Length: 541
Image (cartoon, rainbow, N blue to C red; front, side, top):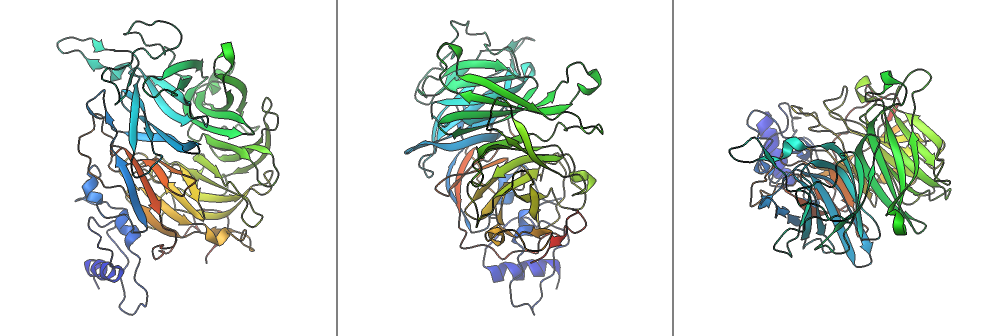
């Protein structure tokens, strides 16, 4: 049977009603002798080819599997632009009290970030936006007190200013807060005294900022602290009654060693976020850096994220760090002096293209039958060797001093990359026994972790994990974005919520809330054969 015939037969047997582009030039042929339908949904989701438009969300229409349900969409119309800013990528969403949930997302535009109330996931409320014309917010997080947002910035953006018509001057209107509840922008929003309305009170581009959002109609920038290096990510957590922020920075110079100063390594910085009376709201507690090894190996500039939590078995306060070629656990029992507990190195466990790319870490909240897992994953600028995209690893961190890989996943079908980061893994979250992986233009993939629920595999090696579904937001918004991204959709962040719902930024399509039905998984395609791509033996189910 030919390729198109196979597609038609499989679509009919699955009764899914898919429309859109075919994802591969060589799809698996269906057989009339098979008892089960051929699960082609995964190939259709990875659409490419000469007739496919990566920038048109309608070219991805109806490619989400039916076990995902959209709950709410908001394109986040910008008061500053009079249209959506666009390029909403990284952010945070979390409950801040028993009755309220907030979401914040940065925009790669003159809108620094937008905040929304997602308490009711079916009714998203846009609360406003902070315009920061000359400084790029790279990441941000909601403080669990519900009254503050912390931001990390990375670079000056003078070239982003609008040119005044008929002149060579660039229009700079300072920092301003726009709220749907007010007719005029609030300017300035700065607690350090009066500012001229054209002044930018954030002259240092690499900074940690604390913004008071207790009054969403008139937020205040309460504090700015310089960062040594470019701010890349920030994570917040309340541990034992204290609000913590963990900030990662890249391109940190090595003082006194000029040859190591360019893109040398990342640093992890820890802050307490609280009211410090006359001393602001962010207390720097410690910085942890991985210095070059004896053999000269260094932490590359591309891997740099992590989380903090209490280990559910050892009761230790631990930071879980994914950076470069290492996954590291830090003992934070003495926050002023973090100490390395354990490490696992990708080197020797993957192809050369996989080394030095670890990006994200997600430790589970609880034990599964006495076992603790942490999911880690890479970020790739381009197509890695030996696999369609990077490898996600499930690590056994029951003993945080000896993390070991026990599960692995990558896309189950080959895909054609024609853009930087286009189908890369990015951020991770786990809800119940399902892992969700944001994949840039590849959407969000659901991965079955249930085979690990009873504990790690008894035999040595890593278990090949199944794909259960994919979510590709395909809404064509009512307005064109002011600063469009490269692809539509683009999904860089997926955030699981305590009620099981999911929140994410869908690039130019804005904010989306959605849900997954783990009782209706799709027919699982054969996992990608990783036996030649990674060193540990792959255990096939």
